[in-house]
Length: 191
Image (cartoon, rainbow, N blue to C red; front, side, top):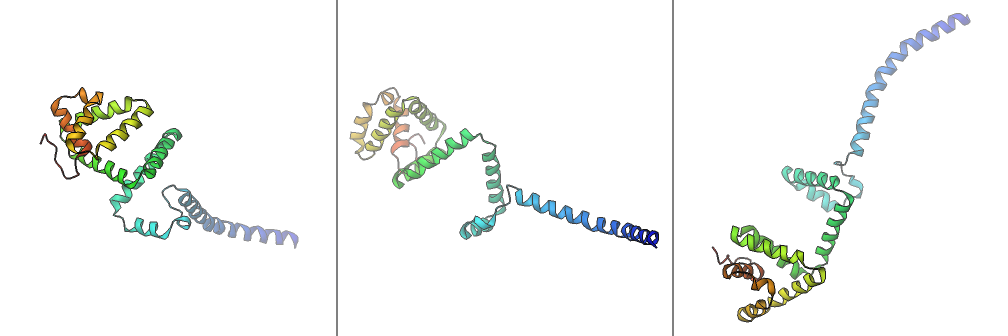
């Protein structure tokens, strides 16, 4: 009787084992897929995302979402030093007063619409600014900011005391004055 019971048990086990295997393999695949999805960097963890940001994300066109994903992947590929440098620049930008941020945004827009000659002068200006020691650069920035409040004639006289400005030709001076002091809708004097 014991031998017969063992034979029956093996028969049942052999009958059930393939069925269990048949059910468990697809379930393991589903579990692995869920684990991979949860660990994927593209998959946001909805628990800690504010509702407004989630709604804004859902309302975005697919092209915009793809652009953001691409920028995220580029960010992840940067070295920790580069990421820290960008964080520092972003922090400094947020600390600027709103008036200065608006001014810099306007300058960016002017530069986008500028011609080749104007861009060359502005690039020359920035190269010169970046070559200055940090303290001198900051002082020069403050001088330029102060010149904005002067009438054009006094501003021109004040700028003539600046060695970089003295080295520029007449058309280059016009381009630099336009870039530094023009209103956003004002066109370049070279156009």
